Length: 201
Image 1 (cartoon, one colour):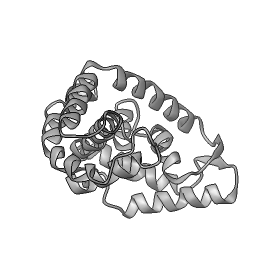
Image 2 (cartoon, rainbow, N blue to C red):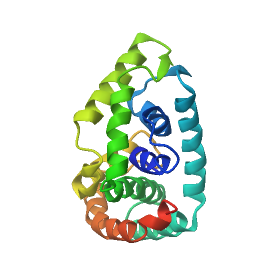
Image 3 (cartoon, one colour):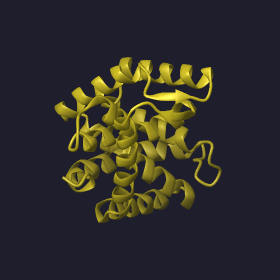
């Protein structure tokens, strides 16, 4: 599950900004390369624990497993190598799910409030570089297009390619990007149809 999906599920427990931010943090920290040395509130700590439990349940769920296998097989049939097909299917499902969930008004409000809270100090940082990277990411998210942009196949395809680029066994070949992009509308329709099962609603 991607970070906005975690915000949506976290709101079922608490929409307190530090908790929601903590629930997104395990996805957000690697995005900017920021390294924390500790949390600054019990709510952030609890949110991170919630993230881990939700991810475990999500990836073990029959809804995700069946959708992932279908998408990976379909991409393989379109010519993607096995590793690339699997990696792209996994990441694309999570990003497209955020696009579906972007219409959740309560989660959008909690997401916005958590980012405002995140501009303060949810973590103690290893160094000043980490602090700056975190601040820059939060500012970018507050002013950016996500989660709505996860409804755009071009945006999602580009982010899938970028997410897999540094992983040799999963990275896509240049010719794979158009194939992936052309497949995404069909995958998005399946994700939308199965979104309730994917998030355990």
